[in-house]
Amino acid sequence: MADLDQVMEPTGTIGQARRLQHACLQHGTAVIAMKPYAGGWLFWKENPSGVVLAPLQCLAYALSQPAVATVLPGCKTVEQLNAALAYLTAAPEDLDYSAVHTSARWALSSTCMYCNHCLPCPAAIDIGRVTRLADSFAASRSDSARQEYAGLSARASGCTQCGECLQRCPFGVNIISNMERAAETLGL
Ligand code: SF4
Ligand code: SF4
Image (cartoon, rainbow, N blue to C red):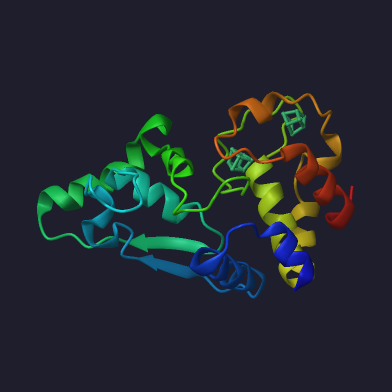
């Protein structure tokens, strides 16, 4: 578990959830995310996290997490159902949940959320996916992460360390270091 502790920056319940999600991923277990709006708590401007999110941002966050295959928002009205279905046609900027970075309660600084806000990469690396695979491998040492990585058309070893992605990552992730780690553990 020491390796995982090094790459899983979040602490407390978020860190524990990440560990469970990576374990599910490696065992081929799909996760259904429930209560993505935290009962509406995240829409409340006085919520203690200090960050107010819109429904689409909540759905985007839940669906970007490892092993999450679908999300089940509670809808009491047709309007609420339509607000959730808007995810399917939403513009990327409407799905940007990076504001959570400003809250110490989320404790996400320097942690990759696999959101791919850092793209495009000139080397065509799917940075979020590659980082997720490296984290999953660190969590379990299973072959499935390596097998998925082997099927990618652009590998971490192709990183030229140009730094373009660093300017776009809202979470302050050391992407170059993550690409080096991925190349080292998943194969070139
Ligand atoms: S490096 Fe940053 S922008 Fe890229 S996937 Fe991770 S958190 Fe998102
Ligand atoms: S530093 Fe590496 S991963 Fe980031 S944009 Fe450049 S080539 Fe892509």
